[in-house]
Image (cartoon, rainbow, N blue to C red; front, top):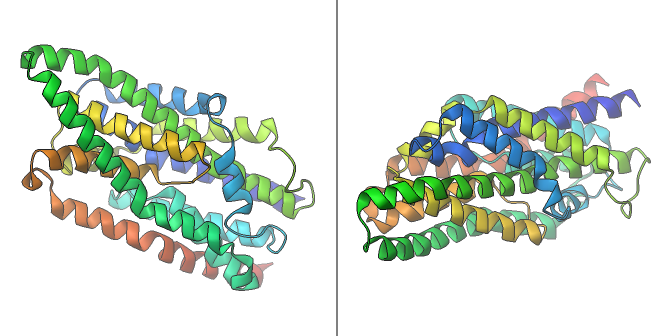
Length: 328
């Protein structure tokens, strides 16, 4: 029973670091355009992170809980190894200022530790393929939507003075940032809920047919919100200005596109990377101004972080499983 409590504590630590690491996704554009101060932006994001469970069904949690690895085959050591792998890679990329995906870090850790424990049969291949597919689909979806929204907004804005456009979109960006924070809390916190649920199934305290308990929902939403409050300022700069320079209307377009993408995939229970989604949306806004407006050198580094996340996390997860097995 003690080991289960340790695993739950690790899940909540991962969830906290997820909020800490990914807070920049929600607030980077609204801070970089100087619509809100960093403190006000973080407080707003944390609030909407927390209330997300009142808006979205828990389909992402179900996918993570039984759609990546088979909870009937694996054990708590597998889950603990995956969490340590995810936390390790998250902290490394946070320190380097790279906006990698906490979601895919977790998936990679789960796959690596499960294979080390029980072989490939313990992995739900169809679920992993769906998640991997959205590594590509989510950012391109965000990019396409932001490109279209920005084209529409520019066409409307031509009829008004730059001052009027700036004034209105500074207000509208508050709504778009809030919507993206809601999507972030809805998709990302559910991944931690799914892991705790899987740990309870493994321990014989729940079944695959049970509903996720309210205490799991509230604790995970609280953990990600607290993480967001502490923020990840190293990544804000990369997301907000180093990819492309943003004006308030462009920040609005990027956040709105990201929120639409997150709302859609969360509704269908698909765990995606909020990092990939908002990065693609920002690139879409920049690309509308021409390819030269996007700083492709920075973008390439981000793409490499994306590509490496799942395999590196899988290797760390496998190594941690063998280490824990040796220790215990």
